[in-house]
Image (cartoon, rainbow, N blue to C red; front, side):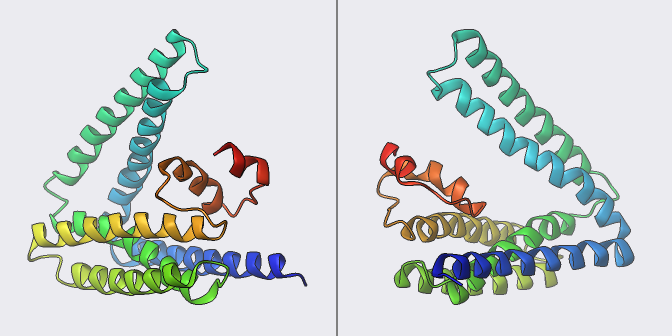
Length: 214
């Protein structure tokens, strides 16, 4: 077994662990908190639509290869997707049957998995820069702890939990991107390298021409 194959197996192992935990969480919600499970079925897909809306807006603004009409359509679709999704999510979470703690649960669960993934990748996948591995271990462990605290005490300190969860999410995004880029000797100092992170997140092998184009 070559080194690249072993490293890919380690990455896949981490992804499998996270997927298994996600399925366990979903099963737990269906059995013990069906209301939260139903709300999550509406919130998560429409949150994904918000991200997709940003992507389409980005294409509409910055993709020079598209003609003016296509860029305008991408921008309009992106903005409409973002606005509609925010309105829909807000209507779900502001419903009388959805207490404020639901927002903490729905935000905390994916952030918990993100933090755990960073912790495991820092511990198991040794192809990355040692410095960024240590940073992701620390940030991942901190994220797991903060999300557990937020979920346990979701009924109190709502704004504090929202702030800490969003802060840890931002830190995970920054340092995870730096971790992935370090495998190829790249840095976040060049913002253009961010577009390569999406390929790395899917464990897609990057070829030299892709790196040179960046």
